[in-house]
Length: 277
Image (cartoon, rainbow, N blue to C red):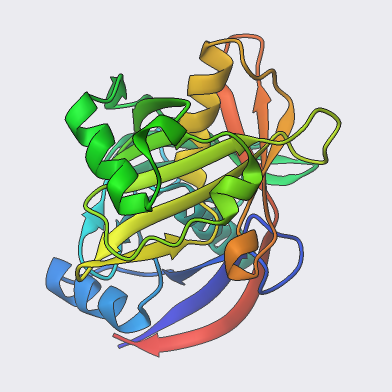
């Protein structure tokens, strides 16, 4: 069956400098196995499938797959899917400008901003300190000394992230892990007055090898919750990610008066057509 398809670059206003997501705009009737097989074939960090919402509170539902598993939530696929849904004319945002996406993690609002689409950061399913044994292993896998880690935190809002802070962006950009056993976010603050507040890299294991995600919405959401919660960052601000893999990702963090944190950025259609599924 021919289905409408888009590939969207996320967290960039410049095509091919962000993080791509494959979006199948009609996943109706596809089995989980078929979705997983297509996600494995695209070999992108995530592939999504749009479905009718199961609740009147949502505009559409989405299922999110990596090449090896389904995720309850992921950030750049949320923005890329909403971009594709709007661009294809599948729906239009209500009068309040909010699109509500349903995923396995629940309902995620997405709104349009001057910096592009933005999603409301979901609650974390795991937070708090990282135990010493895990930190020892993380340091070894990153190829650094345990003492090089300035602070650490579980920042898992679905994908499984654990974050470690290093001394400076140069230390972050110098990392070259080969194998890892955690989904690891690495961050370091830029000097005061820099274009962005901090530099981010994200690594996850795939087939025993460390793979780098170019720009990561879920991780940036949890990092914002961590640093804002501790008073070490104040929204609005911008985080940079992707320099080590020749990308120029920018995640814009804002916060409402009620404390809701939003993660936004540019979205650009790079491929539009159809696939046989």
